[in-house]
Image (cartoon, rainbow, N blue to C red; front, side, top):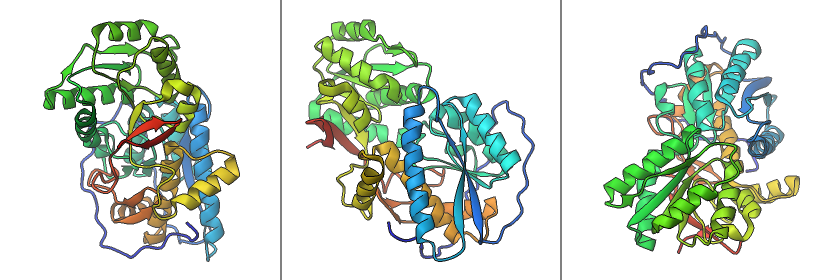
Length: 385
């Protein structure tokens, strides 16, 4: 993308969703004066820059920074975007602290983040209570955006894609008995496993008793051996980035050769797992080889700056900044309510992953984001033929 976003104005659509009960975090509503759209616009950023998810947060920040530089360099006015960054350490408590800091001390009207579903579940009510816009680039557990009209997510919610994914993979591999392995201390992994199992029931597929582990575990051999003994036709794994390579390496060492479908697998985990990742499947709507508008320029620029090809986490982070930039360009003012309205009104916006709109809940529109089954071949993700 070589110029700052300019889109045709459309009628504003305010999402009239009543917020559900908040988490037990008492905050005082913040007030924001309407600003003139000139000068410097401060945007809060909340990412896991330290802790186990620090490497993922770094990848996301790289895309944020790349998009910010492109947008500011392309501006033809005096308006410039500025990030105020807070580290949430990848925890729900850290995300709540970061949101309160940005809202009550920095006085921002919009926040990009958090990254994980657990952190988003904790922090989104703080944004909604204070009537501050929050956009999570990566969280996808069910129901998180539906708490209110100031919170948005770039990904499609889990329940909107899981059933299609099961039908696609089951149609290809013909599995009838499946095993699942998930992180029972992570909200996203737990929610995804539940969604998988609901889809199995709907499709008449037998789901065996699930196996679990915890974030930070490094030995998965006992769980994998029990799964192997049951002789399932496929294995569904729901995990965060730090645990994925170890699970694949240990499954490979045990000789598990059934199809493995793993959540949000990226090139970083594939490289770490090596040969053990070959043939593993994941669900996604984007590849770095796609010819969607601006995608190859994004891939080339990211690689030139950071010496690596962008992952899905990098892509959705880059997309989030451009989606926000489009809303800021369209908003009547820099007041949070005006930004919210402009985001809700966004329709068929060209991004590197394709046409993008928000649905009524504030999630990425499933009708516009392709639901692809990807497979690791020769060390890279490709579409399953």
